[in-house]
Length: 164
Image (cartoon, rainbow, N blue to C red; front, top):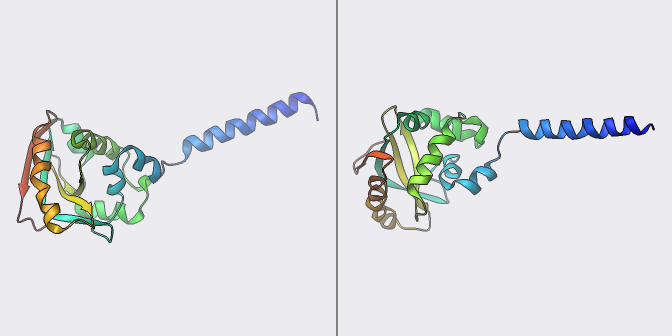
């Protein structure tokens, strides 16, 4: 085979690999490594691994863009989560999940979104199923305090009697 044709073949193969890699959707594993809230956001909860709080935490970011990134009805969230694939979610959602993760930092719990409007999103606190319901309930107010302490959050509140 002619050396120029051989080099051309290698170049074409390399370009195809780059294009195919760039076009493939992000895997759940990549999301999981970077953001535990985004990892949990892909799942239908509660399940055998996770326990949810009864109380609902409402959060409004000071930037409308973040609230809009988290905009989703309960039925939209359930539909996206049924696929279990990050590519089912709108691409702008990751921005909102990243903002929430940055505000929460390292905590013994994760916020799990149950719905979101243009002005605020609602979450249940999620902890491993090995934790008792009381242990989960005890973390609700520390979560709200963490949110309230952030300059990025304009409103954080708890609804103990939520029926969401």
